[in-house]
Image (cartoon, rainbow, N blue to C red; front, side, top):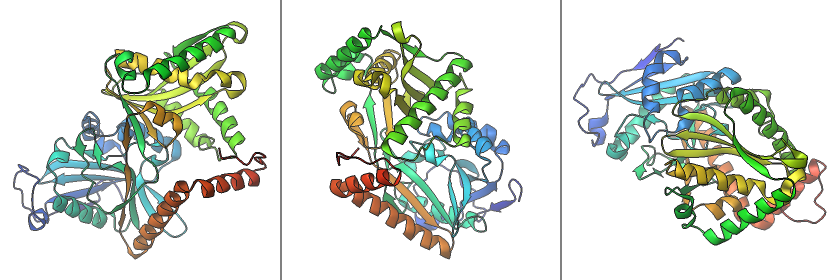
Length: 414
């Protein structure tokens, strides 16, 4: 099926989209949804939606193109119009499992924020009735393609606005995301948290690195520098995952190619990948001991990943020092929100003043899709139960380490 082969038209009612605050009867038949299997026909409209602050940079045209090209994605892109005007682009890919065909957001394994690409002012105006009509028409459009639509890690509220997906059926994601407001200077930013303790940790890190010959805080400025830092990150992260007995989510050649592709986009807004690092001087001159990959859009920056060289400089906490230097620089440059991304970890809580709960939206398309939704909800709730019980979680972690030949002789959770 080629681009725009499948179109679901409404009743022909073309009342102007003056207001989205309509009841269930008024919403019927006013959406038109076309299904596209390649990105190019949507590029112009897609890039226009990229520029809107409320739309996640993880749905940016170039981000999705990099993922699709490196992973050979089976694309399933939805263009949604309301009363003839562009309303939403939903960038999906199709995954075929043993039982279910699942439509998911492109590259969802490595996305920290999922919003969909909505037109301007939709979030402020959409009603629960309209959201339900949208969900109904989307599932109709997916008939013949997928059994279930799953949109993971969506915030119900984001930067003062309500997500158009907020009222759709879903389940709380086991993980939140964490943010720190940037207030124009490192002094004002740190005043939100324990500034005295944070500065003390930074001085200790710098003193220990000085004993090793000192350091430079560097930002990759050329494609060659960026690609070299990425390869170092992959090596450091592989070592860390092996130590913990965890699967390496960055080891696949396709995933590494994806991040290398992101790093090739050096300019523009959004800036898809910016590599920051702590690099040693002196005896270990040129050795990189901490790396962080950032993505920037407008006044919002997301930390996509980070790693440290624990064997060389673990005692100096180079990762904490790198966060300090990045936040110091970005605060002075006028950015307003530093996003540590998804996952509840102590270092994130020590930096952040905002915790953003996330939800997974699951919409069945077929009978099998109802079973897929049930399965997804059960898996998510099981994860929540395990993570909330520290003793059970620790035993599972030790069992996983044992299976991979990494026995924790101290019996302590990672």
